[in-house]
Amino acid sequence: MQFLRRLTLGYRLALGFGLLLLLLAIVTGMGIARMSSLDHTSQQLTSEYYAKASASQRMSYLVLDIARAARNIIILEDEAQMASNKAVIDKSTAEFADTIARLRQMETSPATRSLIDTTEASSKEYLAFTADVTRLGLSNQNIEGQKLLFGPRYKIQGELLGHLAQLVKQYEGEMQQASVQAHATFVQSATILGVVAVIAVLVGVVGAILITRSITGPMSQAVGLAQAVAEGDLTRTMDDTGRDEAALLLHSLQTMNGNLTRVVHQIRQASDSIATGSSQIASGNADLSQRTESQASSLQQTAASMEEMSATIRQNADTARTASQLASTASQAASRGGDVMGQVVATMQDISGSSNKIADIIGVIDGIAFQTNILALNAAVEAARAGEQGRGFAVVASEVRALAGRSAEAAKEIKNLIGQSVEKVGTGTRLVDEAGATMSDIVQQVQRVSDLIAEIDAATREQSEGIGQVNSAVSQLDQATQQNAALVEESAAAAGSLQQQAVRLTEAVGVFRLSGMAERAAPAPAPVHAAAATPQAIPARPAARPAPAASPALGARKAPAAQLGSTPAPPARPAQPVQRASKAPAGPAAAAPKAPALPAAAPKPAAKPAAHSNADDDWTTF
Image (cartoon, helix red, strand yellow):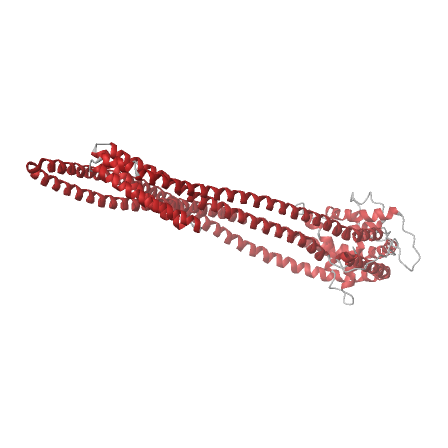
């Protein structure tokens, strides 16, 4: 605890919160590191292991598709179906080669790459047998094709499927191992984070207790000293050792106690000189009268300036109204632009739909050309079978086939051009959509500007009304300035009561107990309560003056101003009368013979319940 007393509150709080923040940073860093590890494992599962296993499984399906198509070529007799199965074999073969090439690029393990090489070698042998079977089937050598299909080709097919099954099993094992590792990482991370969190809570609780005790102890001593001062005991002392804020506070309170003791001594001495200062107040009243006349002239100039400002604000209001109309016109024009942009968007969508339809038609033409080519091929085969009689028919079939090929190429080129056109139309549609959205935003912003200008117009009208109110207030200030002249006369009467207040001030200071002095008896509680009630009667003074009913608050505020206005007048001690006069209302008033000098204060209802003499009434009036 003494170690903490040697540190300031800022260092204590920084130490406590610094430890907590350090532990929090440790927990956060460990959590981020663990989550990064889990994310890496998850990425491996999704983008690496699963992709490899999926590729291996896909190659197995492709092998089966190739085997099924080769079998169909041997079994079927329809040339169209045989050609369709031949296309399946070609497509599956190309996809198999592409898939195994991608799998080799993704794999980094030497053992697995060796298995992939073995699989690729088996696949080449298998595809070679498949090509032979396909060739025999297309040449109607079904018996030889069946022997090759169910002979050595069937054996190499089993080996190839076995290699692919090994790849799938290996990749599934890697996925399972990565999943187990991710779970272990999660369990370890949760345990470590939990332990560090418990440590952080314990450190926070212990630090909070120590810091709280190091603060509340000195604060209790400070509260005790403050209570003693409130009770009037200025002899209390305390231990203010230490370098923290609490020790500084105790030291400051101790210093305040000593300063307050000296102030009480000075107040007792100064109360004797207050009577002398009251005579200086009278001389200050003349200077106050001159300043009041100067203030009235300044108020007239202010009123003229406010009139000019009012005209300027009215002109601003007209300008804001014109700007509001122009903004409304701009908003309507922007709205029309948004409608036109919407029509452009609809037209671009229609163009995109028409382009898609043209692409479909080109696809149909391409299919017709392909079928024409097949028919020409069949016609050529039939012409070859007919011999010399079908030679002319074969020439025609070859020409038809060439024509169908050129038609297919032309349809393909047109299809590519139409596809590019569709893409460009789609791009244009998106750009038009973005332009439409931008135009909508512009319409909203223009409407917002119109609303803001309307608000400026309304605010300008309110300013014009406020200037009118300020003009009225300036007129009231002019009237209040005239009333201040009456306060100058009343302040002369208040100077007499100031001497009586000095006596009461000495009695009020006697409530404090000072070290090295005999305790003085405190005054009776009744005068103290009466003195406390004195400031409440001050606002009742404007009711006794002939002030206008429209500004009672202004007249109520002029009493303190009359006292402060007499400050520069005395040549000997200009500041001392102001200080003493400002403290005089705090003390209870005593009896004074000058009460009959203020007949206006006699009928006041607020002064009758107070238990004061006539001098108290004079001081309250001032």
